[in-house]
Image (cartoon, rainbow, N blue to C red):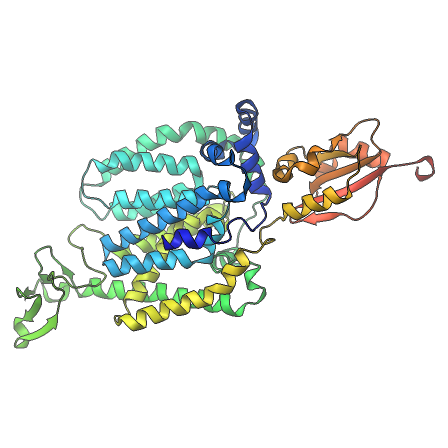
Length: 495
């Protein structure tokens, strides 16, 4: 509930940006128009656009961003459940709280794109994978297919799942069978999407260390939040420290031994030496003259190894591959075919939250745990405020539309170069709907185009005709990657 309240705070304040504009326009098109769009460039988002349609019918930023907010709430609940299953209720609670307060989660929980839903499905698939019954693999396969239909690159989660499966006896074959079933469901999407890759991802570049660092910047609130870098830097440093503490503590406890289901502890370092549990929930080490250590009432020690046993996964064994492998693999693949973007690996962040929750629990003393969590929240406040700013998104299309509305005149025309830029700005469509198509009688034309135009657009015959018959007039309005420029028809003295 806390995560939902947090992500709903200010959800309607930021302007839509161009990617959100495409989502809203696709969700409000007729099915014929949507089919043409999907056939051209956006098949990979088909399922999301269909899911968004009933929300888009209400209009406004709140309604169409609501699915992402609900997805964040669902992911938070799932992270808490996974932490409880793999470790303790305290670890689960703390991991969920860490996830909820990450500025990056609020950012994409307030966006009309599929990334928050991808993370929620990734959490659900991981939860199902960690179950015990073989029958769970049918549901797991469906979740993997759903994950791919929301975003194909989210299938980079599967190598992390492979690490978990290979440590469990007899699980490999049913896991592979479930992936084969998911592959059948995903094959049509993969075939079509491969033909649209250049249209979809032309903007991606081969990433290096700066791009990897951008993931940390985004987790702590994004570029705008780092304009005053002290608090975001402290937030990120504390988060990394908690993640490392969680890894160290979990690894240390695993080496010391694991609890069996009967309340006995087998120490890996003593050749199977057992420490008997008393009925009152204390243990007595026969080799230490009755030395006693407090245990919980259930006779199980509340640490990161709780629930482990032969073939059963640990929190560290699940969370580290989840947090690391999708990012590393995405960077490696991108050296040949760029596919890396911080928002494309948002589904790996739950792994970080689990480790940070474990790090908080490792502090042992409850007051210290909550004090450090309070400091983490305090460090995040400035970033949360920036994320919810009216012009925080890559484009401020709301302000751009207001400026156009104030300057346009009856009879003005519009030219989109390329034509799909109509979708990029039309979410605030009133001023654009008043503009007519460019024709022989047009004297004033608004050019809507990329801020930086490449050679392929310079060769557009419509743009060549515009520059031949019209001249630039007035100031160019730029919002992120979108620019709007007024052109007026040349008179003979201008020729």
